Amino acid sequence: MSDKSGPTRSAVRGGIVHFLGDPATLGDAALVHIDDGVLVVEDGRVSALGPAAELLPTLPAGTALTHYRDKLIMPGFVDTH
Image 1: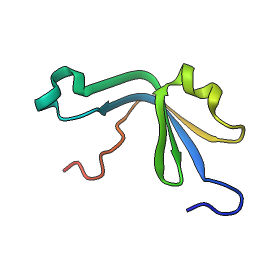
Image 2: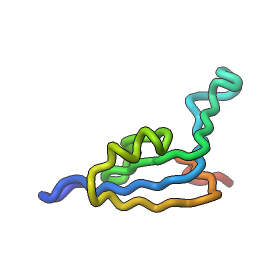
Image 3: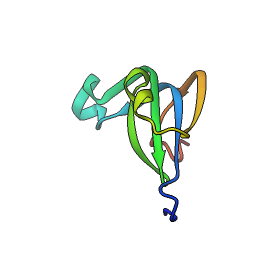
Image 4: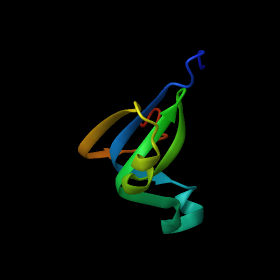
């Protein structure tokens, strides 16, 4: 939910792995790995995902950015057990 000041936006940077679909159906094409990526979250939802070199210049000034060096970000996993 946004207030009058606009959307709540933050970003995380690090290695990113995410899936485009079911690996049983898509095979290797289901997996996307970005060695140095950025995941942008606005109002609690992913609004952008891609290589850091492409996304960092597009982030509005003041966007909170947390850099997880040498860590792997895997969006979409809510409960992995």
